[in-house]
Each structure stands twice: as C-alpha cells, then as structure tokens.
Length: 152
Length: 152
DNA sequence: ACAATCTAGTTGATGCTTCAACTATTCCCC
DNA sequence: GGGGAATAGTTGAAGCATCAACTAGATTGT
Image (cartoon, rainbow over all chains, first blue to last red; front, side):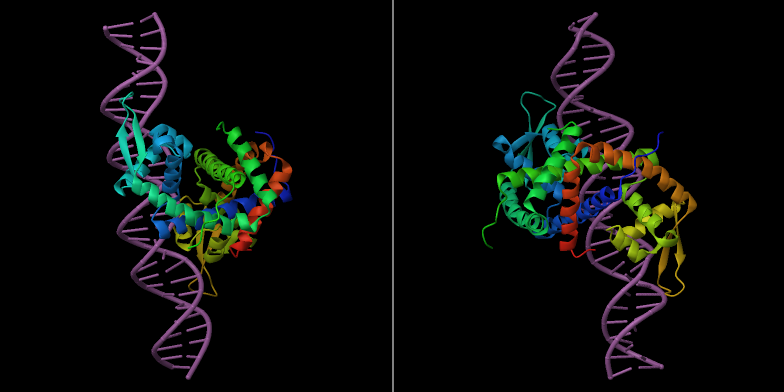
C-alpha cells in the first residue's frame, strides 16, 4: 500500500492517445470486416491462424493460444464459423479428448478476400499515417509486453 | 479492385505484435479492474472523464465522445453505474432533452482507489517494460490515428 | 406560427464474451 | 492396475456491446 507512482504529463498523454486510438482503430476494423465480409475480428483472427498452420488445421488449445482467446470463447466462435461452413471440426486420432479445427476451402477463400480489404484498412488508418520508425517502436514495445506476459 | 499492397515482413511482425499485445494488455487491465474494484474498463473510462470535467459532470453526448463510446452504449453503462451509486443523472435546465451525468462522492472515491491500482498495472505491464522513447512513439502514432479519424 | 427536420438520449432485441460447472480422457505413481 | 490429479474441450447462464427503432424537445425556413 505504498504511494502510487503516477504517470508524468507526457506519459499520461501518450498512454491516453494509445487507449483512445486503439479503441477507435479496433472499432473501424471490426465494422469493416463485419459489413464487407460478415466476420468479427475474432473470427478473422482464427481464420488467419488456421491458414498459417500446416494442413490448415490446429488443435483447439493451440489455436486458442495463438489467437489469444480463452478456450471457451474459441469453442463458441468455432461453432459459429462451423455453421457458416468456414471451419470444420475433426477428432484427433492420438488423443480421444482432442479436436482439430480445420479450415475449409470456403473458409480459405473467404479469408483471402477479407485479408485483401483488411490490409487496406490497416494501411489507411495506421501504417500510412504514422512514421515507419514509430511502427517499429510499436512492434518492439508490444513484443516486450508479450514477453512480460510470458508469451512467445 | 487493384492489387492489395501487402505488408512487408517487418511491418507484418510489428502489426502482429501490436494486435496480440494490445489484446492481452486490455485483458489484464480488464480483469484487474473487475476483480479488485468491480469495474469494467468502459465503466472506469467514464468515471475518469467525469472526474476531469468541471463540477464532475458532463452532458451525455460529450461524455460519449470523450470516452469513445456510442451513445447507446453510454446509456446502458451509465445505468449500471447509476445502480451502483457511482453516477447520477440530472436534467439539464437549458435544454429539456439534455441529461447531465454527475459523479457522486462514492463514485469519486471508488475512482481514486481504482486509479491507484490501475496505474500500477499500466506501469507493470507496459511502461516499465518498454523504452521511454517507444512510449513516445506510441503516443505520436496513435495521435496520428486519432487525427486521421477526425478526432481531437 | 407551423411543418419539416435535426439533435439528445433511451430502449429492447440480438449477438458475442466471460465465467463456472461439467464430461471425457490421459497422466502420474504408489 | 487403480485411484487421484491434470488436461482437452464443451455448455449454459449472465453480462456487456451493437444496432435499429423510438420519444421528446429544439431548430430552421417560410
């Protein structure tokens, strides 16, 4: 219960800009993906991780970790994606508890279309409006955050 | 429908680190505020903005803009805060449609307690683990994003 | 002064997230 | 090899966000 170490004025300003800016940025990306492709950001993230996995499939737990989602949330999201036909679940042979999430052809095609538009939004509202070295700083900073949190 | 300008490898890495890191960071702050003070991040943000306003009160629309929330969302959140006794609504004299959100004494006290803990989390997981100049870069970058989005 | 229009704010339905509880399987080890 | 603990994943309920529809009051133009 010691005295809190408050942020100084400039830290405060930077922190606030980050909080407000990142909220608004996420909002934009969310709405764009939703209206143009019917995907939420968390659905999109799952498709991305699956598309990068060997054979376009991953065990649920690993997928959850990759996408920074809880297992419960992944289960629900995955069910939605499955009912849209973008993902399908397969049992794992070696571990009878296990389940693979597998990207369908339709899922891959949808992702390719969505990714094209998504990258434009990321450019338009972030990458093209900031200095390249500030993007690098962001990368460095959040990598450090992830390391602090014990992730890869 | 032109060719998408894909991100290069280093942009990709930086962008990914940001997406993952910011999601996880928000999660931490959310859980911390919730378990220690019973507040969601969006409730906390509203208390912060109110505490900074003259007389600890603001018109709903202005508060919504400050906190980057939709008016609908503010209405709901404000009702929750009101039922917790942290905020109260007053009619506006000059505009009969208008409503003021007013921070209560209890609300202010709760915010003070929450802010002390919150700043520690922000330090522990972000500010103390990154270089000061990277924080400045983050501030610059997201200010540019906000400007691009037409905010202050 | 009246109608058309615009702005402030709320509401309820719907959908996504979180949390705790649950089943089923595997691992550990005595 | 059998009982206890750990792991994989799902489920349902409750809470929060989003969207469209709505009420009520202000503004504008004629």
